[in-house]
Length: 622
Image (cartoon, rainbow, N blue to C red; front, top):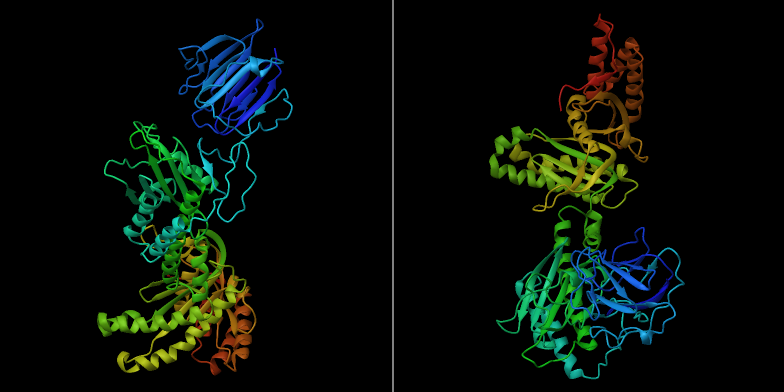
């Protein structure tokens, strides 16, 4: 037997034909049995009702919900969970706030039972439905169902759209009443002068709903993940109950709209919360610096005795939306200022300004980066001589000079650890030339050493020097600190190897060493030579190291050619040729550290009798 079915609630109304067989109703997705998905009524269960026409002209009803009963017109006892009942047609049932009318196909609607008193007095025209198939029947539904009984304003910044069955039409408010709008503007101006970090700021915004809209409860609710916190509160009297609806807050977050003029769902939905005293209310989103919903400006108007004070008007709702926008703008401005001050401790000012506007760039992600570790040679000996106060003055001057070199080449200051500076290129924004920038910063650091030594010569009684290591590759970049202390930087094997390369400068007797991964990414214009292949502590794969020299060294080209020739001879086990080349090189550069080290290794191989040879050198320490 075919059925004609009408489904009505405050959000939707639809009529369709069901050809035959069982049919289910609920808010959940389609199951094996064809289903009518009910939108706009959160009180309807996901699995609510199953109906099946019987051969004798009656209808079999079965309640699938453990929470919501099925009330049959003209019957005092509802159908409860897993109960079934056979009902003569035509008939009507109520589930939650939704009414469903069943009648045999072809029977006029006038013959069906009268409209239930809870049904809306005025509804939009039925939404056209496609002809039913043997599969499913679905009621119209938006991306997220708002709580029933609500009207909404267009999303801020967007033009109003044509009303649908789930969004009643609201006329644009008239602003002729300048006397009514004036106090709002004065309140907004006063609010912007209040520090957003104070409780007074949020309380002032909440209190405006009491004073200017005539609500009994005003709240500023801030969002952190799935949790909500009352940041500001205003009440008309001590008898006002502080409460809010999680369902409505989620609708505001999902649809990014201002909802208003609801009769019941604005009130708290927890146990013991009465719905009877809520007359109207409003909830407007507060947007953050990245245009996400960070909070809600929320207010309720309750019945005072038996006197009704009317709904929230569209004009009032738009003014609340304006106030919420002002709250969001003030919070965003404060956040940007705080972020800028924080970011300038690590980044260039240009990058800090960009990050203040786009903090999501700091979210953890994999990036191709270059990492630099710089260590001050002789720090322990010098600090022992200077004492704590003197050491702090000296190290502050040194780190300031070295940091200037990092920032001058668009680097990120990751950390200072005692006498060590860590810097990074390639994040939080992409830098295709990150290896070149890191190498230039390292060369500038060495160029600063004579200036630093000149300033501190009398105090130190000796000169200081640096050891710098650079490695390039993929690292996980983000906040490596905690929710208590921000620390932006990289993690991973790329970072560990950079640290080991810096340590290798002590053994190779070089001031700047870069890995083969870094050298291959660097541009031209650098003086460099391949010095050795090493295996560092706790990293299994060997790494090829290159030394960076001074571009103003006139003899660097000859040094590079002679040294790399000796290194190739050594790696090919031509130890006599390697020794010959190194001897000639050391006549002109007797203090060249890598040449002295390589000559030592060549000599050991010449006198060795075990025949074991490995050109890769296992470094003895970090």
